[in-house]
Length: 203
Image (cartoon, rainbow, N blue to C red; front, side, top):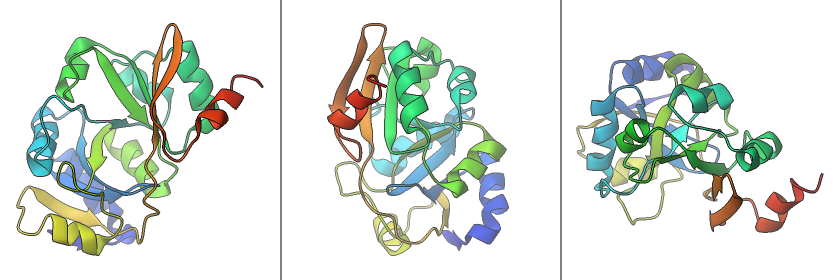
């Protein structure tokens, strides 16, 4: 597992584009990432995390075009929330093509999309397209917030090609919201509160 610094971010992008799995910093915690378009790489995320294949992976994008690119459909509520809080710690679960959803473990034709407020992630998505990303830890364990914790969690794991060192992360998880044609529903409150989300619809 090679440790790369931000000046080596093009090496990280090249690894992702070649179908490798890497650990990257986000605006909340470290995440294990794979290029969405490469199905075999996405499947490795489940193995690395020891994550059940029925627990869906989020997808990182830079804008609404990224949502559409992988078969997602932005509902009215999702559009309002994305406009108010993206980039930021908000995951929006929206309707999606079943074939796209199944790639990341979703069985109900939905995908959770996120646009982190992090320049390193933004650059990688611009170079690699949408990324399937899940927190860097074994399934059920606390997420890693430093490179040292990542090394401890994945020591000896040959499936992780590299770690992009972004320093310490704050550890506060994103708020997760289901958005359909009837409105929205919070399924996990994190960095953004329910009151903050509701305020976006009062403006």
